[in-house]
Length: 459
Image (cartoon, rainbow, N blue to C red):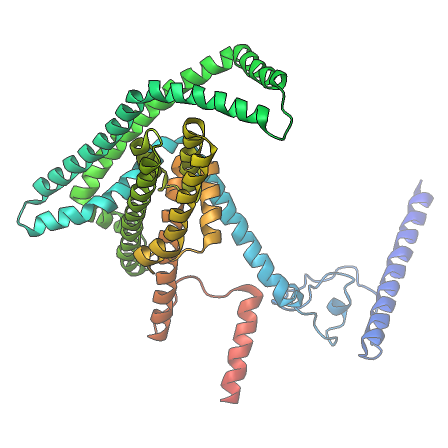
């Protein structure tokens, strides 16, 4: 056993010396390849090597067997971060920040979906407040106290909204029987027109279609019943949201300035001046959007309603009110309300009247898009049509009709706030203010320090 142990010890020492010679030879080859020249002969590694000092940033690590650790005369390797191309470093920095923002937005959307009723009620309260606040200001200028001016404005506004809703329901209930009879007559006329049309439609095919519809309704009775129950739940949620919106509107009208001051108190002190300047501009944008939308919707409802009335389309007034309400949903609302008017004209007055109604709707909407909106809204709400389409689609996917209504004013307000904050930051830098946020670090800080040192030397 003693001989075996001695033989193993000698073999281990030989292997250690061989490893040291191979490391030295590798260092020489790397030095010749780099163009430095032959390196000096390196003696064998001693049994106990001292612990090397910690390398400074930007130098090679002193690892056993590393050529730079054994040959201090060789050029130092650059810092790993400085070897990465600038574009890749910028892309990496932007990427992880975008990932953080995407994660934050995802969590925010989840929270909003859980409390969607509260969020939509408060958003509706903001829109109604933007519409009613000028009346409060005028009453205050006439000498009324703040509480009385707020109460008068809120009561009158809620009464008007309630009367509009009651009028629509009353007109629909009053004309429901007549409309049903006209719908049956219109369906019969369409049936006769289809039989006489050049499409070669037979009465048997029409009867089969009617039979299939009847069977579909009969087999889906449970689904229709559950949909009705769900409709009751939706009605309860709508009433709850209306109450929340009414209370929120009342407090925003009465105490809006104090609420805004409390919100400013939550903002960090360094960013508070910029946010304080962006808030009034955002509110002016929201007010301009709401006023312009109400005025444009009112003009659409009046002219299309007059067209329906002169063409003797039943329920012209309720249809005009529907057109006014649907105008608050950008893009989609005009299409849906116009299609509803055309369908009612088709089933009650026939295809020619429906074509005339379609012409009236398209003419009014073209005047709205090319004359009314640019003239009334002006430059107060500057949102690209593509942003409007994407905002309406995203809002509808997240929160349904309420989300589609709120999406466009939210985008308009965000555009105003971002533009003001960019201009504010630029003005602050021009006046010599210290930029907010951390300074450069890592390889970026090294490069910036080198550029500053070079500029100092040239100066």
